[in-house]
Length: 417
Image (tube, rainbow, N blue to C red; front, top):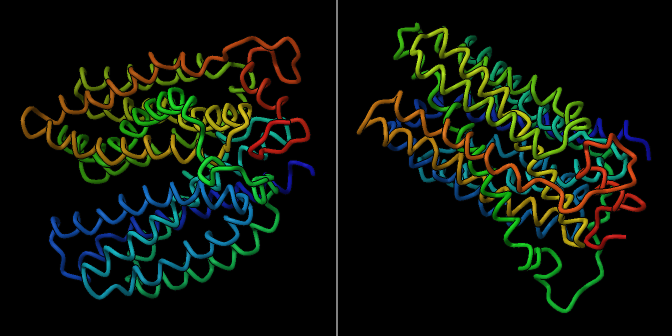
């Protein structure tokens, strides 16, 4: 099977997933106003997102093992889109919590399946593509947010907006997922223990936790930037438009970095790439905080986005490939690593808020600087354990070379060939 159709299908799936999620988040003010929720009540409602996502990540490992990532995505991506409707129709805060939790759980399943399918495309095509796929997720988020801004500007109600988006997204999901590659995970041969079929062996716990720890630091820094960039720039003296542009620039540099990440990844091994990118992020934002000028802040968050852009795709890709090389389920490994990483995006913004109360926001933002620095210092976990003498890819991309060659006929199933 050629790369073109499977790659285009999974890229479109990434883009649609980002668009649907950002649509619901971009119109939170309208949802809050419609239910007359205070900021505190809205924060409680958003707890459903966190709990649902963690459960969904675990369920995704099971579904992907039993059904394969292609079948899983074909079932849940249209459902994720259609769940916009009950979110818009929720009559009370408890109902909103439930619908948020359901949407986040389905999104968690998608996170596992979509990354597992991206890894399958890499292994079958012997090309590095995961960073570009994550760029599509970010791009979809930008498109969804922009469309939501237009809808809000023209006073389009949330119910109408979400219903049209949900139906159109579900139809698009049903069509685009036809071209997804079959990853070979479904229908695996049963083993003595049901859990052993989709959970990595305990002997792999050390590197799973290590990769998850790196992901935790990356997501802590990314989540903090998403939530606090505009506020920090506004506190420095920027107007509302300037502050909002900081978030846009952060997302834009992250998208650009991910689009270029795969080309760089084919020439530079995982460990030095993540080390250099993470340290760029730490130095960029750290320097901006020391200068304390609005333009410096803008540049600092731009460098943060650029540096963080390639780190998570590389971490997820390396963890999944290492699992496949060891005869374990890539989807289960993605689920475990993603669960640990996700906690960073949940805890980071809150920790910054707490630190800002007792110190200052400028001081609190040293937390994502430290997280990026730790990622850079811990990047040695991504180094291959032994060198490869044969290569079908550039010599410096050793880990991916060993991983892709280990796929044999290109299967990403639970057994190495």
